[in-house]
Image 1 (cartoon, helix red, strand yellow):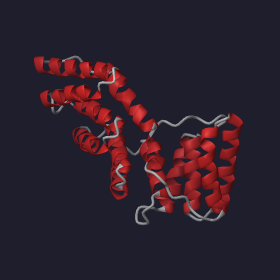
Image 2: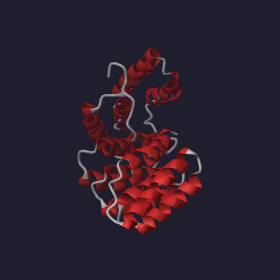
Image 3: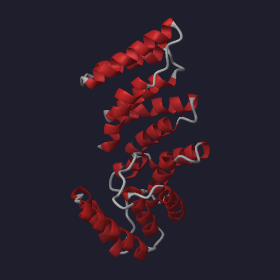
Image 4: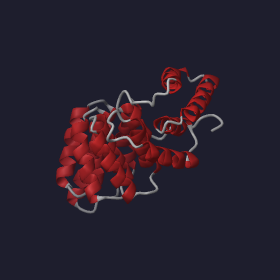
Length: 246
C-alpha cells in the first residue's frame, strides 16, 4: 500500500539525510547505527535494521530522529501495533512533529481503532491547526467511518471544504463528495463524483474507476459511503497526486 511505501522511503532515505552532526561519542555511535540501518533496509534486511535502530534509541532515548526512523520502518512492514507507541513517544517529546503525529494516527487507523484515531486527530489539529493532512484525514474519518459515534457529517464537510480550498486534487475532491453524502446532499455528491469519474477516464487512470463507480452507485441509491478498509481513511495522510486541471 502507498502509505507503507512512503514510510519505507522516509525511514530509509529522508531521515538519513537530515541527521544532525553528533555531539558526543554516544551520539556518534547512535548515528552510525542509524546509518547502518539505512543500508540494511535498502538491502531488504529489515530485522537487522530494526535491531540497529533499537540499539540507537537505547543509546539516545531522547533523540527523536532514531525513534521516528524505527517507527517508520515498523509501520512500513505493517507492524502497526509496535509502531504506534513509538510514534506516540516521539510526539510526547516533540509535539510539533507533524510527521510523527500522522504516523501515530495512521498506525491507529490501520488497527481499526477509529474512536482513538478521532481523538488523536482532534488533538493533533489543536497542536498543529495548519496541518492539512491531519485535517483531511479527520474529514475522511468522520465522513466514512463504520462506527456511528465516530462520524460527524457537518464536521466532515467543514473540514473537507477547507482542505479542498487549499489543495484541489483528486483525493480532496472525493472527500468533499463523501462529506456531501454523509450530510444527505446526494445531488452534490453525485455531481462531484461523476466529474471525478470523467477525470479518471480522461487521464487513463483506470485503477481508480472501480472504487469511484462503487461510491457513485451508493450515492445514486442515497446511501452515504462507509469505508470498507482502514486504507480508505489512512490514505488521506499521504501527499495525494494532483488531478489534471485541478
